[in-house]
Length: 320
Length: 275
Image (cartoon, rainbow over all chains, first blue to last red; front, side):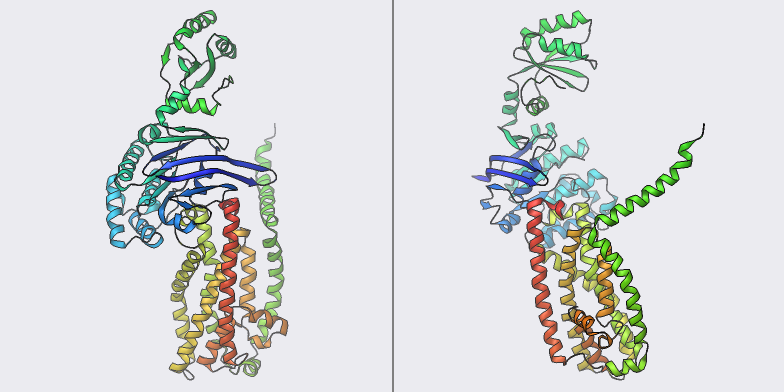
């Protein structure tokens, strides 16, 4: 059964010019799924989430959350969702403790009975290793700790669907891992559907059952993370470990037979090719010609490679 | 070579700061206009205020010469006036700046209810400041005080504050809409102080100003409180003032609901950055 359905949803922001933030999005997320929304900054992920949590009105199309229409059944939707917005790590009462904050939000704003709320606070806090910080004032927490509290707040009332907009943005890798593992288990135990936006590919690989990739407001891909990689990995990758890539070399590499695109990530130059094994000798010739000595290897495309591939439109544009 | 930076920098900071402040001041036109109007009004208000010190005039208009008690009961309403003008808007602005509003607006209750609950909570908190002031007023008027009068006075306060809370919702919405509202609040603060009978009996004001005063939610509440506790004359027949209080409460509630609903609709169209 589908928990989230989008049927040709679009959103225009009216200003001096009309900006189309979302363009006819069709999407279905099943109950209990851990679903990731990927895309570069400004792609429209947050706009889509804000429509689904009833903060924004779509300019057209329909969407349902838990079977309720986002345009007609706002109150019903708000009863069944949890939400942690982007950049919301300051969004609690600074002078209250973590426990007091969570109790207030769960009991006053979500109607969870006090006793149950208190028990859940303990349970969730221990799950993410936060039990010793519950009595600290919110203001005294670090940015990452505050973000963890906001994620706890989003699931405290056991929502049917939980929307998390970049939940691990300011978390350190250890806390991020602990939070996402707990979330995955907690969601499975309680049958919660989770929809999260993220740029963290590790997070996607670790917890997402399926993902959607959005770029320029358009839905480019929906499928599992391995499918996402496979779709991009029609291309294979030759990696040259060099941080010096002269434009002359780049042009020569692009001209080499079989090279589709050349990108640069960190200290690695990546050549996307149809057949890395057959292209490799020609690449080595080009390197020899210009006197570039650097380690070269054929690499398995990562989710991040797939992300970059899709952001670049999946075509050769020769840009870094 | 002359060190130009060290000579020009403080001056540049100064005039750029003036430029920045002027830009901010004039960008929010309602705020700018009311800041000018308020300064003029204060001068006129002070002129009216001086009339109130004429105790014989006070006796003729409201039936008491006990100006101290008269003004103490007026000032005791000040705390709730602050709730209406600053409390809710401050709370919502805080939620906007921290991003908490995103969360609260995805919770299953109406935004109107959320705002009203919070203003009511602030009004209760501010009652702590009302009680000592009110107690002094009661002590000063112990000669005329009866239990029956006290209960009726308190009842008038409750309705009056309820109407003021609705006023607070309207102000909260205005704050969110116009963002820079310090002068707007100062303007209304002045209007309420001068035209509600808080410091000056409404009866001594020119009729057009009295009419404005009648639309302020605390005017009749304050008038009835003084009448029941101090034995002052009321502006109208007390029964009419009770009806006016209830009608005001109904009208302000309706307007507050409409304003929040309008704001919510706009925010949903354009995003919360609209407010």
